[in-house]
Image 1 (tube, helix red, strand yellow):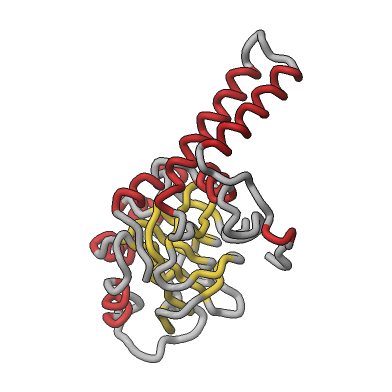
Image 2 (image 1 turned 90 degrees about the vertical axis):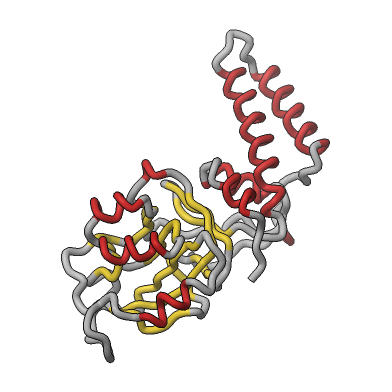
Length: 251
């Protein structure tokens, strides 16, 4: 699994997902309409801020009875698998039921186990419950809905790629998420993203400051935009691109 430095992960968490997305665009490594989840899943704890980590991937079902296990959080193989993924860990759970979100695997108990295992966030197309208990752990959560019961929640597989909310995630992928959603961060450019993000934040602030000043005019705006483009080019970031002009089909 390709990894980046611990400092790079911490640096990524200093920026919101929109800024990180803009920074990734500067390198032209993927199409602009892919690499992030769709709106079928939402962030449940916006105030907790951004989280970054490596994907530990599992599949869950809640509508049918589990094959074995005395309780819904009994799956030692699942917990052991999580520790094979580098920390910090970002849990990905695909609800594989035909109608997902009937019950919740992740509640207060699961959240505390995840936190003890060095996990930073959870992304699921299914449900979670026990919101206050989860929030107290500091675990960021992205889910399709909330539920009253765990129903027959159980792990049915792990360690294989899954698609959740239109985002294809492989074990060990580097992820970044906040109130806006979750996206993949290419490890090949991850170390360069924080600087690109800082440059973009400054460039945007310059435009905002101009718009709020008495010096604003369309001519001044055009000059500021041109200056920003020139500075970004000189800083080593290539201009934004859309590889081969392709568009992604589907979500």
